[in-house]
Image (tube, rainbow, N blue to C red; front, side, top):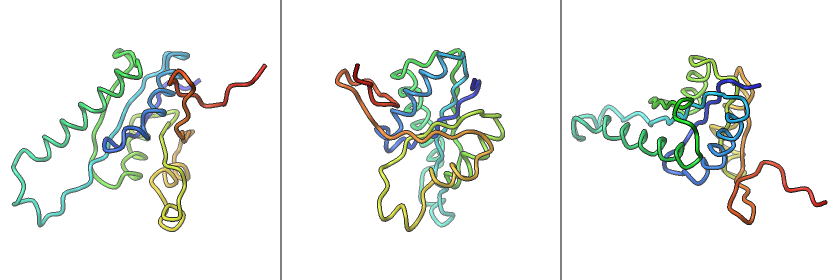
Length: 157
């Protein structure tokens, strides 16, 4: 069973991440796995360094961590098995580096529905899927009538 589950989060699109966080929480509960939520900040171009306040990076990081904490709480991840990290750089590269550094057994991530733009330019999810050294699960949002996320549709009896 998976003992370390990494969940990449775009804090600007929590609706995409929420199913992945909920599924990771459920999976972690089954096997007492640790869950780590990661957000990757885009690097600030050097020409903007003098134009932003000195604490700009710290504020961005703090806001991201607060969002990650909120998502974990909402999903019911026990705080004993939960951690967060914020990295700066290219999303796919940083997620893959964190997965290797932390020793993740599984990466669970939300994804948009495919579009022409995704097929032409590629996506972070696709890069992570093809280059990860561990299992990867890509979640698309599905809810039942009670608002619970599910991976497989309910089977009629």
